[in-house]
Amino acid sequence: MIGRTKEIDLLKKALTSKRPELIAVIGRRRVGKTYLIRTFFEDQIDFEMVGLRDGNMEQQLRNFAYSLKEAKRQKDPIEKVPKDWLEAFHDLMEHLESLEERKKRKDVFIDELPWAATARSDFLTGFSYFWNSYASKSNIIVVICGSAAAWMTKRIINDKGGLHNRVTRKIILQAFTLAETESYFQSRNISLDRYQILQLYMTLGGIPHYLDKVEAGRTAIQNIDEICFHPQGSLRSEFDNLYSSLFSNPERYEIIVSALASTWKGLSRTEILSAAKRKDGGGITTILRELEQSGFITSYVPFNKKKKNTLYRLTDNYSLFYLKYIRDLPKNEAGNWLSLSQTQSWKSWSGYAYENICFQHIVKIKAALGISGVHTRHFSFIVKATDEHEGAQVDLLIDRMDHAISICEVKFYNDEYALTKEEADKIRRKRKVFRQVSRTRKQIFMVLITTFGLADNKYSLELIDNKINMDKLF
Image (cartoon, rainbow, N blue to C red; front, side, top):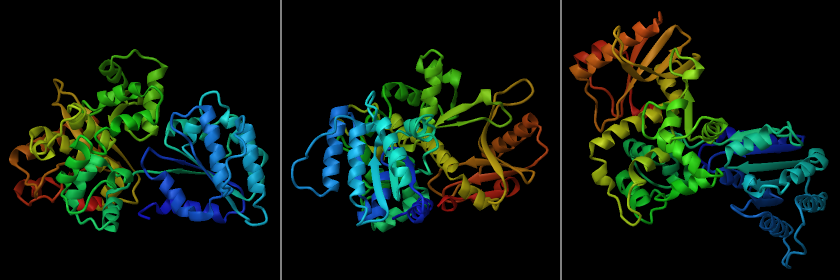
């Protein structure tokens, strides 16, 4: 298995613990939750059920009956379908008790639990009964998975009822990092250099299911063409499936995501409402929170600003790419990524996408700067021009507890980057405006993050304190 070291360690501890374990695994669709659990437990699972997307209560209960039949290894037709979830989980308890003599530690896996817990079905009543009356007193591991992160957080992790404080361990499964993506390709004998991997990551993110579509013997551009732009490409229509599988009324979420895709700097709550043509209210708060919990957007407070100035950025790589290049293509018309990737539009987009990846790999950037052990906070910095100073925008700012601030400029380029006089002057002005507006007394270091490195010339030597290339992000 590629990566997942911390998650596997947690599962090992749960497996060897002497207490009943209720493990909640949360992560966006296609991130590899099911693969992690099935691979770790292999043939040790005594009961497994996967909730049915869009299934009603009757269908979910029938699905449960079929799953229990499979767990019992019965060849005959199912004896009965439970009339409700209390009866269903009672049947499960009886099955697990019958294993007492054959097996000490029992393992139950309920995948896509939010899909099974349909409205007014009282699924959680039945599950609470199962855990509190049986599992909490047994030698058992119960793993529950859900792609709907907000639902899992609200209804399971932070439940105020029968499941309050019952979860013993929590796994929030993240996308692969660049290093893990590289290892994944190597495990599949896909030989790509890091610039090619970076282009794929900018498009697909580190979602294993998406990366699985990449084929050996093709460049990043060829793979993106086939996966995203061919009319039958596997990710041509993934966007709609992605949001509808996680949220009720997904169009409300897609409108917000589309609004955020229109700007690189992010939008405030007020700006989002204006762009999405929505009125203020509790609904928008819920949507923003759920999008962030699901890993699609990131909120941040700009440097030296207050919480009320919070900005929201779209940080899901695939959503950014889809909304920029795929959404407006006619349904049965193929796009041409080779042509699109030569346009000025792509140059602007790729710069932002690379900046996005830098935010996602801040730990690697800190290591490259030699400050892994220093407590830091990272921001963007945006200030409008006034009569007293020019406007300025800093891609990435690392505020350090060692009385220093690293101002990072991010440049995506297909060769070694050479700093020009014009660019150097912009950076000097940006540094001057930042010091003037922030009134910081900290040491300021200028950092340039590039793809293939920074050429030494008189401008870079006198202005840039630290150079980081894409290799440092892997």
